[in-house]
Each structure stands twice: as structure tokens, then as C-alpha cells.
Image (cartoon, rainbow, N blue to C red; front, side, top):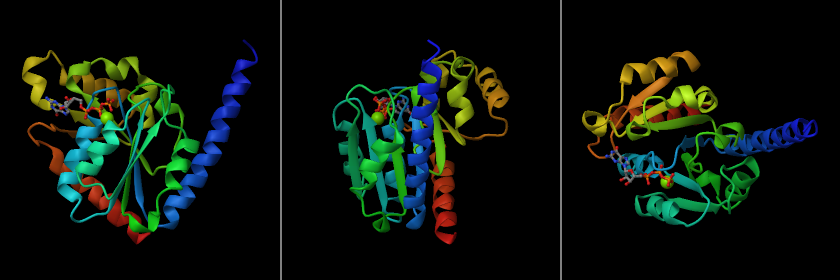
Length: 222
Ligand SMILES: Nc1nc2c(ncn2[C@@H]2O[C@H](COP(=O)(O)OP(=O)(O)OP(=O)(O)O)[C@@H](O)[C@H]2O)c(=O)[nH]1
Ligand SMILES: [Mg+2]
């Protein structure tokens, strides 16, 4: 038991070093990058599809998709207009790590892109612990998951810079208390940028797309 803590610390610090290298590589080409995290089925790929539908004619987008198995999500991103989409199969790991992203970056000519979206494996625990080197981490919470998730998964809610609250079209049908949810978020991550949205109706997506477009522009200007 006493040996486990140094081993975990070593794994995480080795991952951090590789994440820093990924960041240098991404920065060198002026690409803006996000790590999209959420529980399974919260709507990560749907948000990517809806984002692409609104920006793929203006921005060159690469998508890297992490899943335990299948290439379904990378196929969806390609069909939605991603200029490149790469599927990583973790073969059982519940998160992406920096070495996996490095493998994907080696397959991309980053000078050909403005935006890199990484869809992490659906999970509210492990992905928060492994930095990838992206500029911003974004969490998608979805209404059917329940309003107690910030309280139960504080590490994830603390680790991100923006929060999409997806599936708000389902609010009339599900006992989701938005005030309770937001109080939990605020206690962990005060002032976090929040985007209530629905991939079904399109509500709220304009604000999200406008934020991400601004981030791409700022990154180019650096
Ligand atoms: N009602 C409603 N359904 C949605 C919304 N967004 C996504 N869905 C549905 O939720 C289901 C899961 O969506 P995905 O985008 O595949 O979710 P994901 O987070 O990428 O799932 P994994 O990659 O498997 O973890 C699909 O049936 C979507 O059609 C939404 O805003 N409202
Ligand atoms: Mg997905």
C-alpha cells in the first residue's frame, strides 16, 4: 500500500512532462485545442457535430476521439465536416493520456488546422487526472445525469475551464434542480464559464460557438 502513492505520482508527473511537450507542438502551429470530457452519453460527439455544423466552413478542425472500442465517434466527426478525425482505442483504459495524444498528433500536420478538439473517454473521474496539453478543458454535464454530479465528482468539476450543460430540452421531463446544480458547481469552480445548450433544439449553441471561435482567433494572434 505504501508503495502505491509514489508510483502514481511518478506516472502523473511523467504524463505532465509529455503534456507540456504536446502543448509546445500545438502552440508552434497556432492551433487552439480543447479537451472535451463528460460521462458516457452526455453528448460529447453531439456537441462536436453541432459545432462543426456551425464552423466547418470557416475553421479547419481536427478531431481526436478517445473510446475504449469502435471508431463510431471519429466517423461521426468526419461525416460532420472535420478536416481530419483520428480515433484512439484505449483498449480498456478509462481515459486518454498525453502519450496517446502525442501518437495522434504525430499523424496530423498541425499547420493545416485552426482548432483541435479532443473527445476524451466517457468518464467523470480518470480523464480529469491526466493532462493532455490542450489549452482548455471543457466539461459537458447533461440534464439526465442528475443535478448532484458536481457534489459527487468534485475533481472533474474543479479541473475544467468551461462547462456545457447539455440536453436542456429535457428539463421539463426530469427533476433536475438547476439552482442546486449551479450552487455545487460554483462552490468548486467559482465564476466558471457556463453554456446551457441543447443539441436537439440548437438552443444555446450560438454562445458556445462564439466562445470557441474567439479562442481560435486569440490563439492565432499570439
Ligand atoms: N434530448 C437530447 N438528446 C441529446 C442531446 N445531445 C445528445 N443527445 C443524445 O444523447 C445520446 C448520446 O450522445 P453522444 O453525443 O453520442 O454522447 P457522447 O458523450 O459522445 O457518448 P460517448 O462517446 O459514448 O461517451 C445520443 O442519443 C444523442 O442523440 C440533447 O441536447 N438533447
Ligand atoms: Mg462520443
